[in-house]
Length: 82
Image (cartoon, rainbow, N blue to C red):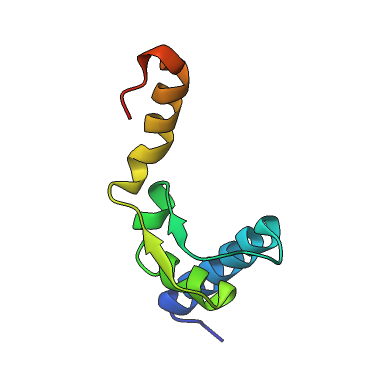
């Protein structure tokens, strides 16, 4: 039996969401902000919401959040502007 590609993608996304939820632990509290480039993948925020059973917001420019955090850490306390 051949599965439609969208069903395969949904299954992969659900599996990833379950893995993330498992790493986060049982006591995930709102608000939940999805960061990183994967947050831009269509259907991924919804998969995470379904597994966590809580609303998930996607950060503005989520693909930049890791780089921004690294830059702030590299700048050190005296150079921080935020």
